[in-house]
Image 1 (cartoon, rainbow, N blue to C red):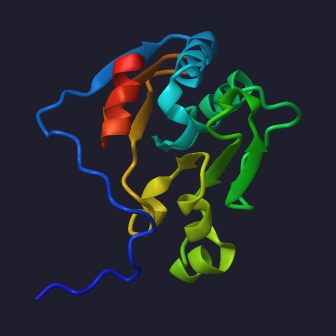
Image 2 (cartoon, helix red, strand yellow):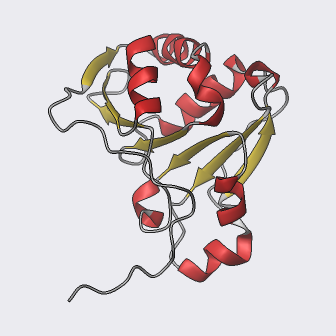
Length: 178
């Protein structure tokens, strides 16, 4: 007999991606490549309500990608990492008219599922807007499936191997558009 999950699903679970669907692999040779990818991702119509997860070691470039994505979506002002706050909301006029909020999560220091409810994350994930999460594995039992998972591997100081994997129909649409 399997145990019931600790928390009920946050939102309705979309169908999983076809396991036979190949991931797309990219090479970024500089931060300019990261910025160009962020521009292409920001231009995708399905991004407004997507859940995008970012995977990679410390220093791989997850926060750098988020900063470029936020800039591409029209976010003004300082963009700081939510490592200690866990989440930072940003007004992103580039997502309008579908949504205007980007929720940037960093679950690196997340270790207590009670924080999820106390912080109102269930409500955030059920609301409109783009959700982007660094270190999603730290909260994996509580989050919905990622629409698009981006795995960043540092090859050296400037080069990155990036693997994109769609997890839902929304994610497949984003992947096709890229």
